[in-house]
Image (tube, rainbow, N blue to C red; front, side, top):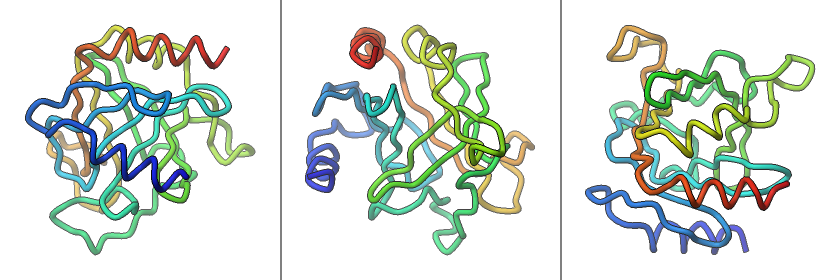
Length: 171
């Protein structure tokens, strides 16, 4: 069922040029407006609380387009993934599922660095204008000199009411 949902999700999403948010299967989803990665879409939904799922080419890990042979070594690690909403930065950690990467707030090592999404991050997603997800995949520095060499940027225009509805449904 989840594979069908992912296929339907990618088929129904708008093109990168428009990148509008849509409600699909109880979640809110969009495509990147700019990326150097294999990220195809993100989805905010409710599982055991609000989650952000990242969908990549061929249901695989997020990799740089310029180096598809790179190894995704960012799962369950602190400091390997970061979200920026406008001028606010949120450290994240990742876990894998069958067809997506699931983002969590960075937590303690005893919990594999996974913690429920920070309410401040969820609030920023509802009220912000741009989300940038950044991954440390390769030894190369990112375009801004940071360790985050692989990234995708998303418009948050129109996402607020949908994300608010999802967060409330998780309560």
